Length: 316
Image 1 (spheres, rainbow, N blue to C red):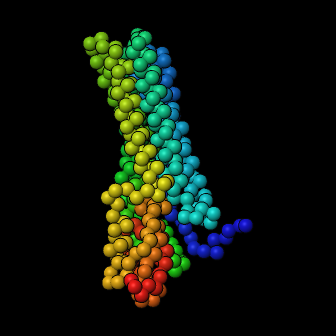
Image 2 (cartoon, rainbow, N blue to C red; image 1 turned 30 degrees about the horizontal axis):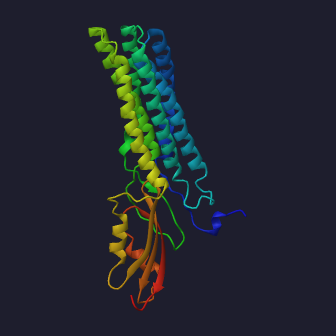
């Protein structure tokens, strides 16, 4: 059976900067891809494990960022598809989760290759390798600058409802795990470049060639920790997990549970960064329309979609 939007209301949960962010990530991918080719070639020619690690690191980042771009594209094109019960807002978290897995694989590969290079050292052409590593760092910093507003920016969201089961008001944006994943990839690249530069400078000055693979191991461990953090954040959204310290359920209870009214069942989940949905079951001794309780929730932060079920309970 086909589902028509006319059968219900809109569930479009996309940030107002959705297309702008997509364009910026496309540009970052282009910059990263060019530098990736340069670093892999230079690392192979000049014998730097740190430079090779950074180059291959960039190649996997390009793949992960492509996942993010495709998620934005798909979410935008299917935003009005009624088969997505609560819109396409969670596609970004799915992409972030996939990117976190890629980050973890990058960290493990970097660590393994660095251990092999530590056991079997090779000669390094320090001057050339340092120049390429610095160029890689510049590209990373430019990419981070392009994404500067995307990591912690508070978005304004466009979302309209026409059905009496819904509720909407202006609110600040939440963290977009898709954008966060791209930002983490760029910062991980920058950190790897810095570690490569430090290792190459010290190796050039004091002959400590062992620092080159050691820095690869250190970088892998740091990236692994970032990957775990991103996995937890995006996985929590995908599983509708309410993290500790989330005030939204308490705000709903405070708004509804006044007098003899009490909440008997409450479900709250994120449908998109900055947008949450809630199903609220209320027991009350006085028969009231659901709109009465939705009006009480009008000022609850980040609550965009509300369904209220009212049960008359004389014992309430």
